[in-house]
Every structure is written in structure tokens, then in C-alpha cells.
Image (cartoon, rainbow, N blue to C red; front, side, top):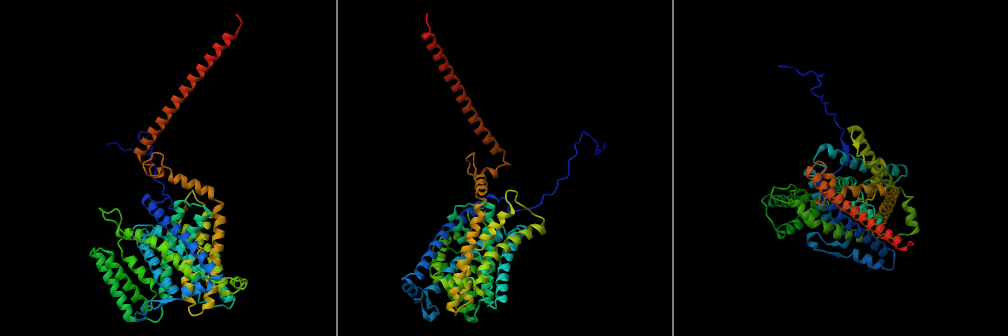
Length: 488
């Protein structure tokens, strides 16, 4: 029995694999990339509708249509006996946004069981970035109001990110982000929504009606039981969901929490015989309603604020409104960027080699667009003070607009790089429906590419032979003409 020494040349020395550092904002797995693309496509359309609704609301509030606009949004409808005699604006905020938060609940559940938040190491980045992206704006707001002797009541207003509005900005300026940045923005918004939900539930819950709250919990338990028994039919779940929402509203807990709770109960993992999980299927059905109807209608009835020279001046001079603007524009960008950098620094992870830290800063500034949830929290924080609520809404609009303009400038500086990265991600030269970057380790892909290039090579060889033949014929024809023209 012979021993193999390290110096024996018959047996090459194999070096131990060098551990690679984990990358952040790396390429997504193909199924996740497709899910993100589908989700963002719907949100982009909804974001454009949201922009249109906001413009219509501002036009109505600042033209002779103002009286009609105020009459419509203050019109009360609903059964008073059930405690639901609400204004149209109130229905939009508490009713329609429950659909938005229902979708947010499904998104969160999916991220926790099948997406980026499933892996604790991968989840660290969006969670830390979202936490810093909420803590820093709140701190900026608090600092401005402490120094300016303002009110700390609105500390939560600049903490939210509006993914639909952010995507609408990308659509308007014609910038397509690489999938890693798009997924980061979507996951960040999902985590952001989770913490916004917790803020609403903890800090904006009025006096509790325990009887109604108990009824809401009983309804949620029945909802969960029906799901586990695999009971199907919208005619079962829609009336039950409406009852749960009504009970939650009357309990003193904000009614949108009911939507989140029901979304979290849906199963978002697929069985072997399923193309989509029940949660993904329902999200596919409800997301267009949320993005295309619920959120734009909320904006239509909530974003209509009267804009005057004085009100614009107050936005940048009063501590409450200035704190909101600086929180959205400065706090969000610094918080999200700082959280991402700290995650990379303390986990020793490397940034995706195709991206740079200025790219992260651009996306972080895009997170400063805090429209929908910021408006909702503003209404809750300053409920009962109509004048201050209007100023807060104007501050949210101003801060979101400035953040959008800042992000536009930063993204446009790298737009060619983004276009090249996106084109490389989507390139499918063998035409099998799978981008080539996902098939680098598939020998069948390389054989298909070899056959394609061999066919192209044969085509070009045939063209070369044809060109040579034509050139030879032309030379022969020219020579014969010269012989005919020469003297005998």
C-alpha cells in the first residue's frame, strides 16, 4: 500500500475551495424573477392611474369644481345602525385601502414562505434597510419639530414607501431597473408595509370595543378554518370578509388590519400538482382591483388639497410639514442607503458586481415617495384638525414630488447601464423561453447555441462563395468586353 505525498506529481494538488463572500442585490432565481416582473407590471399600471387620480384631485380642489368635489367626498352613505354611516372619503380610506392591505398581506406571506424573506441571511438586507428607512425619517421629523417647537404627533407620516407611485415614476421617465434592484424595491416596500401596519395597529387604535373585536377574531378564525378545509367559492369568503371588516372597524382597531390578517392566512406554497398556490392565484385576481381601482380612488378623494402661495410657503416653514418633507426626501434616502451599507459592512457581503453604491442611493431616494400610506397615517395622526390635515397632505405631496425628481436625476445618470443590464438579463438567443444567463451551466443550452452558430457560419460561407462567384463572373464579363474593344 503506497501513500500519496503532497509532492507526488502523479496526483495534482487540489486547492481547498475558497469561501466566496455572499453577494447582496444579486441575480434572482428565475421563478422569483418572473413573479417580480408580473407583480411590478400590474403595480406600474396602477401607479400611472394613481398619478392621474392625484392630478384630477388637485385640479378639482383648485378650480371652480371645488364645491362639487367637496360635496361628493363628504357625502355620507352606509347603514348607521351598523356604525357604517361614512363619508365617501372615509369609505375610500378605511374600505378600499383594506383591499390594498389584503394584497400586502398576501405579498408578505409569500415573501416569508417562498420569497426573499424565507432565508434569514437574505432577509437581513430588506428588513434592516426598511427599519432604517423608517427610523431615520421619523428621527428627522422629530428633530425638526423639537428644534422648531412643533408637534411630534406626525412622526410616522414620512416613514412609508409607495411602491405603485415609485413604479409610476419609473414608467414616466422611461427607466427600467435591473431585476435585482426592482426586487429590492418591491421587497423593501413589502417590509415597509408590514411595519406601517404595525404602526397603525399600535399607535392609531382608539378606544376598544371588545365585543366587536371578539366578533372580528371569531370571523378570522372561521376564515382560517374554511381555508384549511379547502372550502372554495367567492360567495362564501366575500360576505365573511365584509363582516370581518365591519366588526374590525367598529372595534376601534383600524379596519385595514382585517385585510392584512386575511391575506396572511392564505396558503402561498405550491403543492406538486399546482401551478400556482391559492394565495398567488387570489393575489393575481385581486391585485388589479387594488392597484387599478382601490388605491387610485383613495388618492382621488384624499389628495385634493387647496394649493396657494401661503400654503406652499407653510410647507417649507412650519415644523410639522417641513419635518415631513425632509423625512421623505432626506430621511428615506439616508435610512435605506445606510441600512443597506450597514448590512453589507457587518455581514461582510459584497455588492453585486454589476451595480455600484450610487445605484443603491438612487433606489433609496425613490423610496422617499411615500404617498398612499403616508396620506392615510397623516389623516389618522391629525384627525379632527382639518386645516392641519390639509397641510400635512400638501407636505406629503411636496416631499414625494421632490423625492421623485431627485430619483429621476440619479437614475438618468445610469440609464444606459441599466438598459444594458436589462437587455443582458432578457437575452434568449436559443429561443427556448428561458434567458441565457440562467442556462450557463446547462450543456443542452450550449449545444443549441453551437447548432445556431454553426448554421449561421454555414449561411455566411454560402454568402461568401456566392460573392466570389459573382465577382469572378463580373471580372470575366469585363475582360471579354475589353477584348472586343481592342484593335485587330
